[in-house]
Length: 281
Image (cartoon, rainbow, N blue to C red; front, side, top):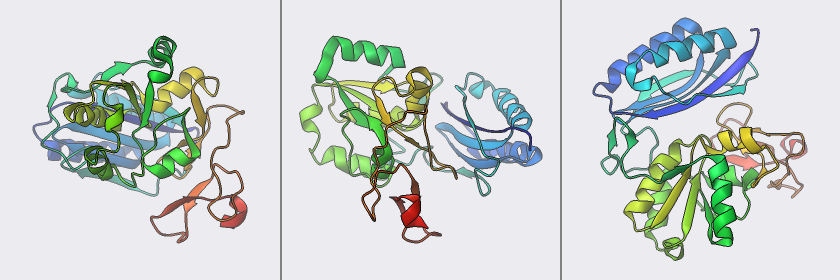
């Protein structure tokens, strides 16, 4: 393999025949030798795949040939060549499983009624104008936020995306309903839904970081409001935006500073923990 690359993208667009899209995506990826995870639903597509750069470029071209995906915002990162164990292409009720498929309405412009999209520069502008009033709301699972998050962000106890609806409905965050809330997640897909369900539950001023932490990190690296490492959904587990990223994580076993995430205590299991390489070994 010459240069391994990973692409991450999502598109919210009505898909009348998700199964046809699944079969097409499966066929394209298999023919190009790509691995990764693709979820298709009637709401759109969410894809993270990796492989040789030439094959990944062909995949992007093929995917954009479908009119609904033509304007997909593709985020590129460097892979290792062994980032995904296999290829998985599935049809599900939602491309991000919040457990409210019927609450989400999608038209040709994306999710209806979501938060106001802000570029990384516009996020800084909002913070400059409104100061401490602005709340960063982490739309990821708790483990992801342990190794990296926006400065002063609200981090929930969510273990899966399904946890957000009960957390929001518990009243625990009602005190934020009249403040400017900036939702953020890895690439932006979870915030498309999270910002919508927050608005539906009475949060009056909701924004979403367009392109997620990935786009923010490309723009400001570790010299802005982001702190630490970015958790990623492949064998790398986490990545940094610069050589001076802060280490926010603490080893679950010895308490040492680390941004290392691994399957622990069962190496083959699904439970993740922040654990230093020494304790893991």
